[in-house]
Image (cartoon, rainbow, N blue to C red; front, side, top):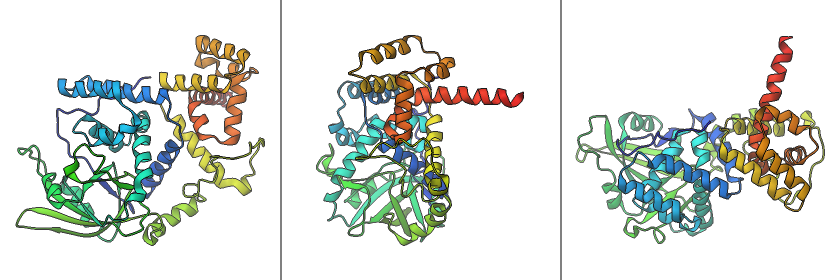
Length: 402
């Protein structure tokens, strides 16, 4: 089933939610944090790039000619090294990416993982250059309801729903806070965020002024995984602006730890420590069983990973990633490569168990990936694992009816 990604258009001017109360939405923060952690462990491939470009292709069909031309330029020329130039460019790209993140739809987000990885990777590589940053500003329009929620959360913590562009220049930030379009009738207010950055904070943000295509904006970009403390909220009668003071924090902050501690305890620290992942320089674990008395947290974490994977769409890109990882794994084995060719030509989801019980590449590769808990391989094999899981579940249901 192919999703039609047409939820984003430029024929309207929605003012979208920019933040959420971390204390009220702790579960959401943890769930999506876990999901993004998994995505960060997936290697970018040509298939991931093709899926991202297909999303842009579906998006640009309903746009103006100018937007269509920019989309086509992106499709033809995008390179990971140009991620900042594209993000800061006045085009569809930053709007599409951020609206995708705000949608909280894991299929839309997964389809854009290629550029999400590129942008976060850039911030990670350049964050050591941020020691001189002290205060940055962000001007925008917000619905009154969200402003009031932030005001009610003074002293509390908030998380972001998308990447946040800020600037060294308060004057520049003011320009971005203008109400647009001017004739709108909904309850939208002008807001100026003042963001304090304590020295030594381990946040994922970077000064991108020298790499931005619009240098005068003096831009500092924050990851959507950033966390802030609300210090002050004030509305002035003179310029009818809301002024909101924030402080950047990281996961070592005592208040953050106190909010997360009950969740970490109840989930056996599966989200904070992620110790069940096999990341690098490991010996293959050939054990077929897990001692749940000793490894209950690992078991729960792995079940959550599988649950997220099974929620993803079955589409041509999932199929192509499966075929690619199989061929890469058996590149020097002509016999198995022929079996992979046969699988590509004849596979039917109703035959998943039949293929799995055949002594061939699928059985060995899937079990090796599951036992070593290789996130990258497991997700690239998801097309077949999904079918196998569903067929086994159907057999179980039929058995229970007897």
